[in-house]
Length: 334
Image (cartoon, rainbow, N blue to C red; front, top):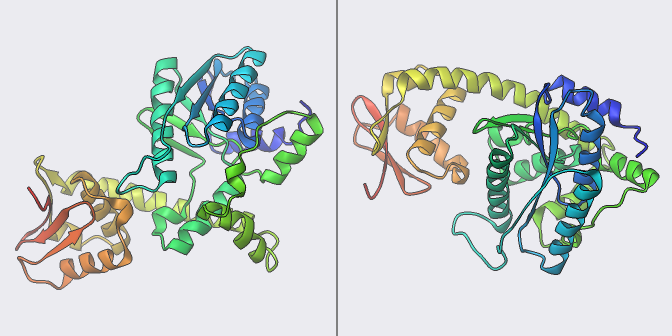
């Protein structure tokens, strides 16, 4: 298809070192405009980056009945037309509830679990998703509204490594309107998810109401939010590297509890202290996503002011206790 954006995608992939010679790429294709466009872009870049193979994967969450089944059939047909391998999985998430996760969070967790398993089964070392600059801006604004930490405000990472697999977002610097214009010009078909227009979902409200309202005051709002995430990500990566170095030397675990010497955490800057505490909560089985500003202030006060024997309860049934020399994270039922 005719494509005026390929040079922009080429710059993005090079700037973030997304693709390398010999990569086997699993393209996550829902059938929507962004993922269909991404698949075609990857095929255009295949020779440029000496990609060994592109494989298509698709997941039907079972949330939209007949429509989501038709989306999957569309993707299967598209993969066949392009001569690409197709990996598919269907779940039945409709009506299911998770006590700690929203339906959207549960669907995302299942989706990425599928991507990792499908990549390993196919011998792929890269998973490509169709996130755009719009997705980045929406994510940053949603997290700001809900009150996120620095880790949340950095938004969607263009590249990240997880379980030996490189997750890439080649479209992360493109606006959805640019992609739609390209698809219209080329006549490339794609599916439309009607739930994207329902105002029962927070992301849809942000996309369709809040961002358009704010764009009256700054027409470049989406790019500004994306740039903010990029700048903050650089700071967060610096903090994370420093935290990892400190954590390797100071955090101790015996399988039942996670411990750190008070003197080792007190000497750290507060930004690094937070990331160490976040790691300790995660290692002890707590729910990091449920940490609130109040929890952070209580932990800070525990470290600096409270006498030994005091404790703070954290999400996921974890209690942090202060002894005369240490902070100990352990389950309340341990």
